[in-house]
Amino acid sequence: MKTPRILQVGPLLPALEARLAQTYDVHLLHEEADAKAFLAAHGAGFVGVATSARFGADAALIAALPDLKVISSFGVGLDAIDLDAARARGIAVGYTPDVLNDCVADTAFALVMDVARRFTASDRFVRSGGWLKGQFPLATKVSGKRLGILGMGRIGRVIARRASGFDMAVRYHNRKPLTDVDHGYAATLEELAEWSDFLVIASAGGAETRGLVSREILDALGPQGYLINISRGTVVDEQALVEALTSGRIAGAGLDVFEHEPKVPQALLALDNVVLLPHLASNTHETRAAMGKRVEDNLAAFFAGRPLVSAAG
Ligand code: 8YV
Image 1 (cartoon, rainbow, N blue to C red):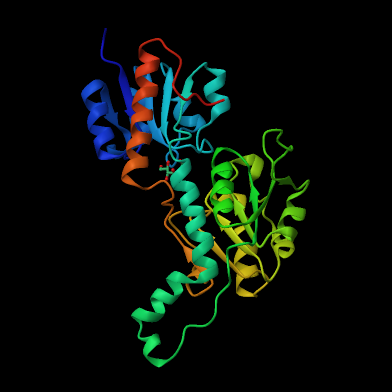
Image 2 (spheres, rainbow, N blue to C red; image 1 turned 180 degrees about the horizontal axis):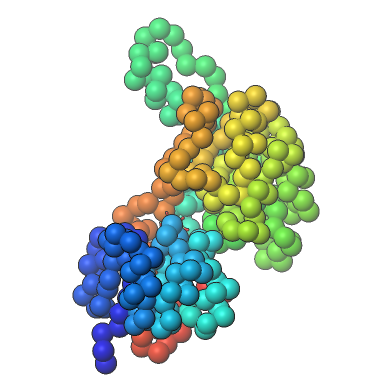
């Protein structure tokens, strides 16, 4: 069999890149000076795309690859992949769910703890000599509080488990109540926000969830409430969030994701009640290795004529 031609559309884990290059005839699109011109001239012949949740595969890319049969993406988020375009052409789409649940849930919890107890703010206080001049102000207790989860999916469920270790009450909002979840269901996001001390966004990104956390939802969360986002920046109206934080209409926010990464709204940088992370929730040796393996396994399954290990939609 001819070695399958794979188009890699952005940098991946170096170890994964090396293994893909050993197995496939890989071409790196991101090293092309003019990706569009390259695709127009050389798009035919690529049967696979290796990508990530960050770089995705949009309709233009898919259209430029007439022989494409499989997309294997590093990440659980599918918002940057045009699934309709792939489906219309019968292109298989693989991704990496489950293997990152622990680390993303851990990050959600680290943000809950940090934004309430103000650990990174107090670290700045120590480093800048503040302790020599006085005591750090009081913070907010986490254990026993109310944690609302928007999006009780794979990751949401692990976050709920973490919360039980902190004796927290948990409720959630999804489009529909789930029959296999014991936590209370809030029929609307507004109701959930009103109830929550901490509102954690764990829903998928994409058009369906864009701007769900609006000014009204932030006002329902209120001046004692904290927003945590480990999902996608697009789920939140970022301008409304900046306004709510700067005017004290919510207590604080722990954010791993932003609307225009790696750009973070300038106004947030000056706020001490905000914890800002560079989209690192799944970023551990263990989890990234497992994600890389799933990218490989999805491709291997496809080329062996088997169903993908993790197929989207
Ligand atoms: C990664 C993510 O940062 O899985 C996702 O959807 O957003 C993160 O785990 C991303 O996949 C890296 O490209």
